[in-house]
Structures are given as structure tokens and as C-alpha cells.
Length: 184
Image (cartoon, rainbow, N blue to C red):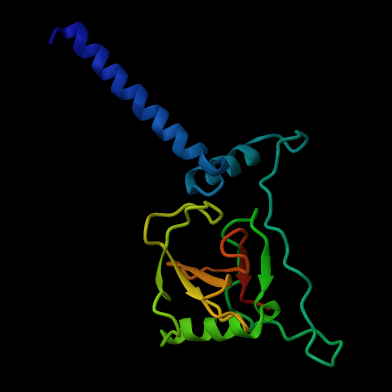
């Protein structure tokens, strides 16, 4: 290989590496990547106070706190000092844990205890083929059946969990998801 061909090969490799890095940072608008978020925050803070620089978007608030049955008073807040719940993807709707059907709460209890689960398929890897959840490495998500009254099979309701502890609810067999807000 001549020195000129070597130079072209090195330049081609560098361009590919730069394109891959840019694609990684720009995937999902770059908002889920810590360096992209830090870069956006430092860019926003470096601008003058009078400039119209875009501000990072804040997560959407959850639905108002539900009342206890038969009461107009809201349910108590989590104890002081507990970490605030932050959605993993602000573009994804969230649902209060208390807004889920009783069978979903039963499934969440089974997950917390580690089983036993009513279906052999519970706990298997959820592959996120529909890409409706944040992109993660293979094996990150696991799915669990939520019993559907009157159904003679597993039905369409599931809870999907992530390795970091996040939980998602789908009532329509992965067509849509809501992140479960454990604060309410």
C-alpha cells in the first residue's frame, strides 16, 4: 500500500468514526445522552441573559394526585428525603400507580417479590421491537403479564420493567406505553 493510499484509508476511518459519533449523539434528539444534555445546558448558560436561546425542556407533570376513595383530600406525599421520580422519557406519557387496574398492581407486587408468576412467559426479555420505549441494550427490558378478566389467554395487558427500575404499562399489547409513576 502506498503512503497516499494509507492516508486515504486513515481519513476514511476518521470520517466514519466522526459520523458514527455524531449519529449516536443525535439519536433520540441527543437528549438522552449525558454529554449531549450537558453540552446543551452549558451552551444555554453561556449565552447572555437577554438572548433567546432555547431552554432544555422539563418533564411533563403527572396527573393531579388522586384522592382517597370517598374523600376529597389528596393522598399523602412521599416521605421527605425520598428521591423524586423523574420520567425516563419526557415524550412518553405517564400514569399514576394508583390509576392502574388492580390486576396490574398485583403484577407489580409479584415483580417486587420476585414471583411466583402465573404465566411461564413472565420475566422473559422484552425486545422493544416496536421502539416505543427508550432504546437500550438487548436484555434491558423484561415483560410480565397482567391478568385480563374474562380472557382465556394472556390477554393484551403487560408491565414491562427496565434494569434501572423503571416500569411501563401497556393495555394494548405494546401499541402504546405509559411510564408508571410510583409517587402516586
